[in-house]
Length: 391
Image (cartoon, rainbow, N blue to C red; front, side, top):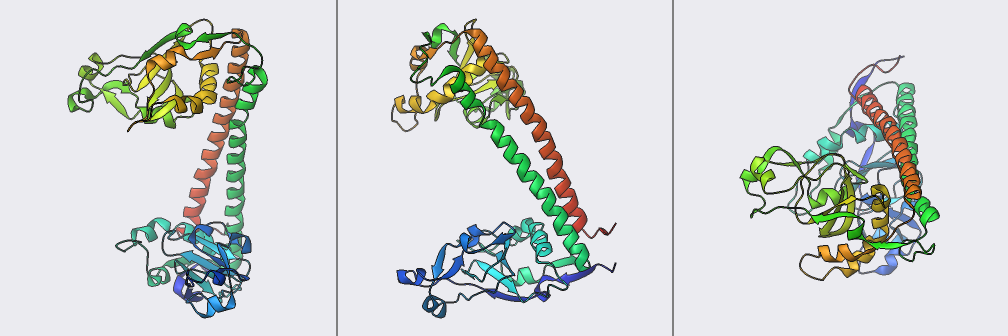
């Protein structure tokens, strides 16, 4: 089927940089020629729907931008270094983009080049220079060496990678849909907790279980003697950035740190009261946390998964109650007195089972997504690392 050969990117077509017409003449940007900048790049194909503006003939004639013929390769050299797309219509670009036109498509697949450039982004970013806006020189692009197989193999590679990419995007969409199922289910079962249209009994949060701030008695909190031991330590940002469960931690207390703190049990609902207001996540392990986090351990009348999603509805409302200061926060007393809707526990448990089943489905889908992404990386290495892909 033919030999693979190494080719300079600079030898596959004609290189040209773009430009920006004068911003002082607004009518320049009210024409008919699509003009794009680097944020538009990344997908395999772009057209006039990706345009940042539409230039007039006068704008083009008075600036460095030029009309690039359709089926050229556009590559970012500043801001989005290494991002690329194929233009399916004639298009203009700004100076942050280099185009390669007049590519001999009887020998070189544009889609293959687009995939190749995705493997070069780390290298290209390492070559960036500049005091303010960093970028790469066109010569750096031209010197890239491409492992170029026969055209039919190039097309096969691009097609297979596209198929895997499509599967990855579909799996991500499925995971997103699962994320969107839970809140509507909460509303269907319990109504809006802010307005309580179903008339559920309400109780103060402090009457529904143990509610206390985390403990960090020693100052300063980052004293090295407190850290580096075997006792997990959760911080506010980790709660705020968690999805549902806290499954990992980045800090630990030493024995000294542990002795001046408190260990909360697995299953505790962590509630942030500083910086990020009333964000919640459930501990998946025993852990300590500072007094910028409140821990809630439920009693017999409520379920942690119910409470986590209940708080997600009240989070914005609680932020509005937070005092305006250098660092926004709410105090424990505000949390203690919040009135919580308390549907029957068996109904809460049914909701919790729904959440658990949804999370299990997400885990399976995420495992599948991880395998697809690993497969994609492996194929990219095989395709562009010089391996024989013709079998």
